Amino acid sequence: MNDQLRFADSGEAADLTAFLGRLVHYDRAAAVRLQAGGGALGVFGRPPSFEVLAIRTVRLAAPVATPLDLTVSAGELLESVDEASAAATVPGPVTGPPWTGVLPPRGGWRQLPGLPGPREMGEAVAAAVAEFRARDEALPAQHRTRSERDRIGREIWSRTLGDTELPLRVVHAAQSLGFLRPVRTAVPASAPAAPAPAAPDPVALLAAGSWLRLRTPYGSVATRRPGATGGLGALQVRPV
Image 1 (cartoon, helix red, strand yellow):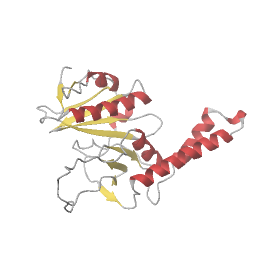
Image 2 (cartoon, helix red, strand yellow):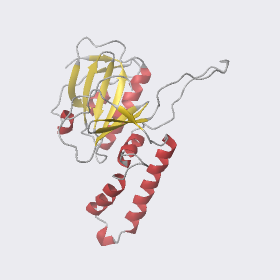
Image 3 (tube, rainbow, N blue to C red):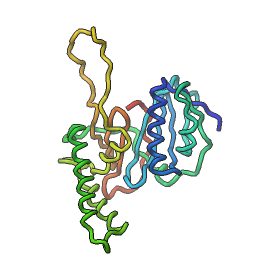
Image 4 (cartoon, rainbow, N blue to C red):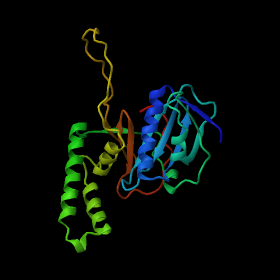
């Protein structure tokens, strides 16, 4: 496999490097599924323990001539990214884990109401982390086992956020992967004040079939609703 990927700019390459670096931090043997079509590359990963699917969409310098769809080593892809030249070499394919065959649907997403703002979501994650630590420290020595800690973690992170169906683990994953952060926009000092044009919500909760997705300007985190069965098609590759 010698395919070359040319990104729209060095910033896109840097964002991909950061995303892959976080995946490898959680799992040195992490795999990612790549889908390139048109002028965008979709990178899908599954950080362990969060039980979610993370999606980063990267803008390409030009539409790909041939659609790309394969699973590769996240570490090998990370090593191939050259931020200075905004390019990467696609590694050879690997046998993907089962999750690579069950991705969110291409379309049919609708926005759901009730999602708190990024600040409130960050506070909810911080409170959950503090609760976990307090309950872990309160465990008697004979009960401080991996299984008991996992049970506490599942209980806390399976709770839903506010009045939504979104499990807290999705928000935790989005924050840990760097998806929940302020959007920086450069405005010239001499620019006259003017009303900002209407724009889509930068952070939104979406649903399609059995899937929920937390979308941010830096990436998305998706999860199946409890009790969901069966697979769906691949998520459409387009800038988030």
